[in-house]
Image (cartoon, rainbow, N blue to C red; front, side, top):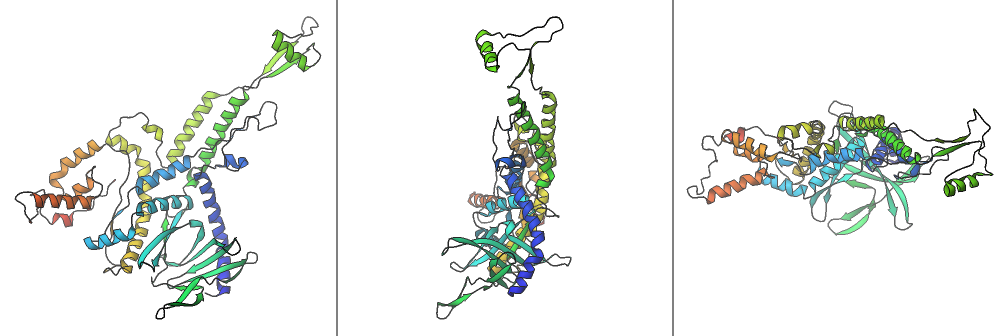
Length: 480
């Protein structure tokens, strides 16, 4: 990748990336509860009873509501509290993959769901840790990545442009780094000027003589051995659109009505007195007479005179605003495909009723999982290739995603007990409400059976009427 080619490539994709970054930044603001209503306060929710210089309208309260953050975190917690279980058909290979994914895999998936919700897609990269000779992976902020896709139907990732700021320890100033990754190399460039865009090689890669064991120089080119672009996209939906576009208008409407209501409550405490034919010298005398004597002097010219004191107050249409707020809030959770926590405030719902409450969230989560499965499989295959596991490209990868939700465990346990005599041990272990890791549960069952009298080393299924081959033929039951 030459300097001129890199500069032209960045210019070509700059406009589309700018639009993408703007949408992402707006989503992050709403996720951090900095809705548009707070734009005058630099994103801070603030109560300001004297923010306007108007006779009857002094209050300018601007309180933001974090519905969006609640909806995003609901889905992330629903599908990513527990990491998806991976099964490639071999126990030893499964363990190697689990070890490579590490303890933070669930947290990584959770963060990717949040990134994908805010940006329309999340990104993960992987690399070789030369110190320990292991494969490592990490999340890349979505606004740093510009993908270059093939125009063929398989939508293959051809290359990735990555841009980010880096601190220069010598000057204490930040400079911008541009990277280009393809299936063989990573190229590093340093931005010299922005307009016009000018780059120079960023020699941050150490070149070593493996035989002598010392550094021979530095380069801006890094050769990797992955055979493909070491970046994995985690899309949220087909259009790669953030979740905010579904509900932004509704959230803004709720903020507007709520803050208007709050302003009226503050303003109604300010009563304007209208004086007609007041006989005093000035307003100070009027306020003194009103406070001290509880009476004021009014000039009266006879019959038909309208002298006196009148008040101007703001009327609040409470009932109409209550209905608007209730309807808007309901639509936010409906359009955002989430669950209003208030629905669980006072309920003794059965298992079926609880599932109905989760129906919209389940629909959104299932769609997200469908797109994420392909990406997780790609990460697993990268692990298999790195550690030399057989048939890394053709082997079938089974993923079991566990939902985390409020459940009626008694109803689920009764269902499991009812079908136990007609189901495999694996299916029962997966559906058991008190089992978190079904594979470990099967191991526990095997150990218990071997320790029981009469079994010895010949372990048999708990259901003698079922043939052992059922375990291989039973279709996977996904945990919902």
